[in-house]
Amino acid sequence: MEEKRNVTMEKIVNLCKSRGIIFPGSEIYGGMGNTWDYGPIGVEIKNNVKKAWWKRFVQESENSFGVDAAILMNSRVWDASGHTASFSDPKMDCKECKTRHRADNLIEAHSKGTVNPDLMSNEEMEQYIKEHNVACPKCGKSNFTPIRQFNMMFETSRGVTDENQNKIYLRPETAQGEFVNFLNVQRTTRAKVPFGIAQIGKAFRNEITPGNFIFRTIEFEQMEHQWFCKEGTDGEYYNFFKEKAWEFLVDLGIDKDHLRYKDHDKLAHYARAACDIQYLFPIGWSELNGIHNRTNYDLSRHQEYSGKSMEYIDPVNNERYVPYVVEYSIGADRLMLAVLSEAYEEEKLENGDTRVVMHFHPAIAAYKVAVLPLQKNLGEKAKEIYKKLSKDFMCTYDEAGSIGKRYRRQDEIGTPFCITIDFDTLENDTVTVRDRDTMSQIRLSVDELPDFISKAIKF
Ligand code: ATP
Image (tube, rainbow, N blue to C red; front, side, top):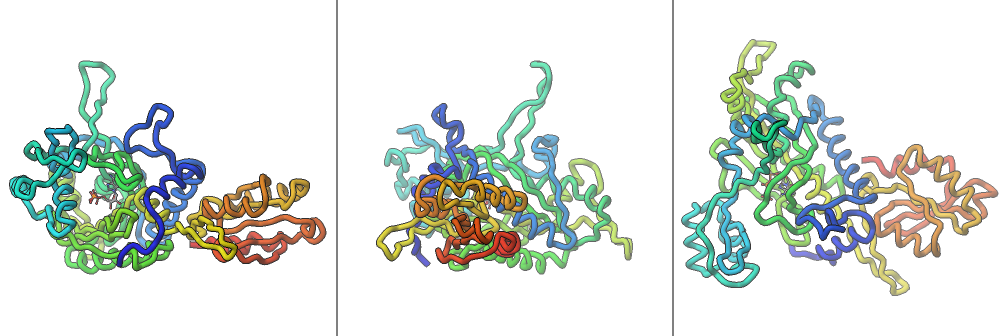
């Protein structure tokens, strides 16, 4: 299915900047490439996205437990996981304009997706680029250095004296925090396999070609869920999490025509199966999340490198084994971009005007309610209602400008309900409730509001 919406990346970036959703990082110093700061509206939306994910994958998931592991981990973790040896991308430098590129991305773009560089060796990629005269996206020439593998982990050092510094890394994924705590969680929760460990947290990657707004950044948040199970049940759970991940996205308001599964063509040597769910971003179909059947590779490697047993002992038959892992991993920021792209609409109104409206799922919207006095002299009553509703919901208050303008401002940030206080409110304690999507209005008593809003924002 081709792009049918009128959303572009430029429109999303502009809206985010002008409405306090996302700002360029360190902007007053000219920015810091590919870092972004979430503003007052953005931080609420992102928190709500994370809350919805946690609710689905921890709160409502029998036998799944959360952790919040340290970002800085013992460097041996990254030796065991394979990141120090091979968490790298094939980089090439353009000899003409000195820009750096990923060879696989150059081939993918040049072949318009018809050639899969994942199946090629470095030599084959170099040959393809030479034979097809693949051009540098910056200067248009085709004169590249040979490929070198570029490790994407950010290094830093730990130590209180200059002479005594140890190299450590900013974690490039959250998953290892779940693996190293496998037995801690199992013991303290007395969980029986199969069970899950989930985590939301920051990860850092020195990406060769970051960009496309928050799609690929050097610092981002991941939401990961590792399901520990017995060999032989892994295939069934792999399918289960493929479906569960899809369902979560659809329930969050993403049109299923904008989603598709994409199996990996090339599997890591230890993996049994891997697929992505792709989303039709304004930049085209791209990975939104991954589901991987990782066998017992991760726990076995930690067992080998730490010298500590990672075996689970079945309490019924005393069988000992290192569990298999089905991993589900999604970027909170990448999901945020999908949610923003999905919600965006420029709607033509009957009077010929156009309104920009963000159709977020009400659970995701930053403010659930905007309280708007029809006139300034109704402010006292309006503030009283605002104060009351704020105890239960994130609300905003606005008395500046015409009511039409105020509605538009709320539409642009996706507030599902506008509550208007008029002179009847003073008489009978009722208000007008305007629905963001239909723009229809109903009259409710102030006492009915909490129930009405609670029902509407349920995820
Ligand atoms: P890609 O192929 O896009 O580089 P990946 O396959 O390396 O992604 P994983 O390591 O499987 O990604 O990470 C899981 C998820 O984390 C991705 O599906 C994506 O949602 C998110 N993610 C990964 N790298 C980034 C990044 N640099 N910026 C933002 N989100 C990211």
